[in-house]
Length: 306
Image 1 (cartoon, rainbow, N blue to C red):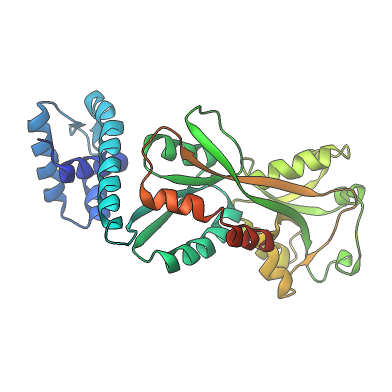
Image 2 (cartoon, one colour; image 1 turned 60 degrees about the vertical axis):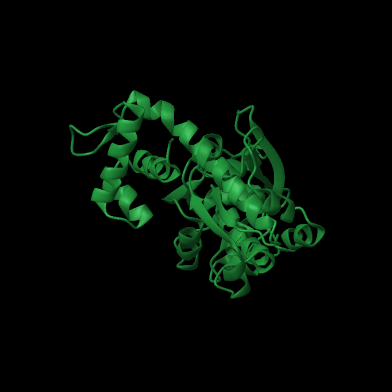
């Protein structure tokens, strides 16, 4: 009979491509990880990792076992949570992937509200790319994910989560800080700080500017940063101006570190989605959080967060 603990150790070792990495995640020793993997290999009569190099590599057998092991562990979690619910409490470990900066700002507040009702649920949020978020849900590493674009996957269920506004911010010392609005054509004369090419806010900005016959190469891009928070700091320092998520800029705007300037005829928005796997068994904590985010009071909270 397969041991759940051995499968759990195997999953962590395969994901980390390292026995040491698995040991750190599980808070056990590296020899303990090796022992569990050896036991599993003997039971399955197959080699799961190529140990001939400095970094272990999963074998073909390990690649075949990995999704099955995740599925078994997911069902085991579902059983544990179902039994715990018979005693009137919700417990378990909820893993959420997040690919958007706006999502990172919203999730902690929702999770805090959720845990007030269900303190027995532990939540882990992993930051990743949109493709990574979908992949984690598809292979069972995350039960839920927040992302800003729909990906082609027939087994993924999408639900609108939050509509994010993308706004123009300038330093308080900038001449536009005293203006009620500016025209799109005025943007081409300014120093711009851009997000990286894969960022959702950058795609939204590009599409919005194209409606006014302005292309990205028409702008004077002086800096590119991979973090909206870093961009807000750079704008505050006077390096340039930028379009970023308003929920990220809100604190800086409130504290008057930067100024939001409306652009005439340019209203930039993007839809964030919450996703889950439609064919995989849902844990009770996963189902509870999925429904929790759609409760009227939390939908109102999300509306007010814009």
